[in-house]
Length: 508
Image 1 (cartoon, one colour):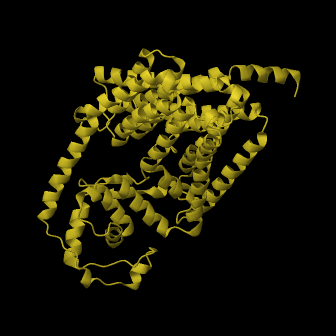
Image 2 (spheres, rainbow, N blue to C red):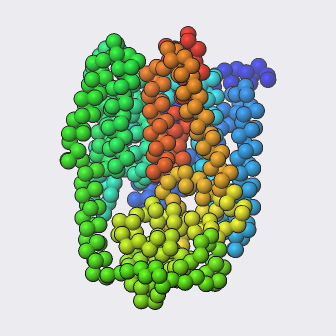
Image 3 (cartoon, one colour):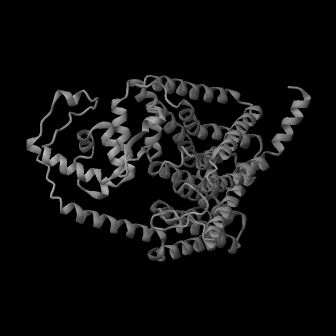
């Protein structure tokens, strides 16, 4: 390395805290820009290009600064192998590799998490002040999101979390589940960071707790409200266990604020949303009672033709009269009907276990899992190993006006999504990658709790758990980069906190 390059890299290392802070703060700003691009009909080309440039630039910076490049080469090799296997699987489709650009871009979104985690670990190794900058950036993000929510409500431009019912304050953001995941991951970290940095002062902890929990309270999803409660109780317990003598007042204040939000549950957007759903289900049940549909199981038969469909189970054929009644019920759920057009009504009836429950039939999450399961059943062995083409997760139907509609069945669960889009190989790699950081931190705490069980470790561990829970129930953490970048910071933070020597415990 020349002296000039060494000087340049030293300057970059010095500015890493500012770079990481910038990467944090620009995320909600890009989300807001994306919202207005969509609202004005401009498209998301600009914001997507910026995100891709940020990914490329961050990865290049990490590669240039690291003294352990073998990990970058190893990561690149694994991702290249997954991409090659996925490409070969898609090429074996009935029409070849259709729309490869959009499919590969989607693949890059999944690879974003391990790549960014590797880079943030490098930045933490090169400059320990990055850890503090990361937490300051997270604090700034929550404040920005809260301000956007407030401004959108005051100006009457809030799209609402659930637009049909006009429930929930989403702000100028497009992805409800991503916002829930982002706020849930950042809140415990910034609350405990504020408690730790403010000494025995009460006001900073009160303000940050109230702001972060309020953003979750007004959002409306059940997972957001549940996260709010879990964060408040978890922070209180962590302070009792680790810093009772220093911060018991702040811990009690956090708990009291949380209890106030719990007491206000009947006024919450979450409560209103659940009530609206209950009314719709009740109306649908009354409609179904009038149909008197009965499945005569004893009059079913199997045919060789059904087994040629590629399904693993023999398809049950219903009597015409029963099938027609059931078909009428399923047709009332428009999006399900494109699934019927794709796989035939008997396979769809069977995967739903011939249910008449309107709540099951209207469950979009299960609907999409069922569609992708049937698609995977018809796919070849390579698809099971390396995943399906993104375009395979869509189906077409004609609506009531005769217009051709394309329904998107991309699943709403990240772990299912990683499996269907990258196969068993991709899912196993992702799970092992995620578990590594949690197990590493747990082993460190068990091995030496006095050294590693700290308030920052509690905050990042809670964020880690909430991130994984959101990934299970939504598709907006592992596969949406505005959320996965924060999960990458959480994973890197766990690595850093489980690596610190005793003398570094107060360096941040």
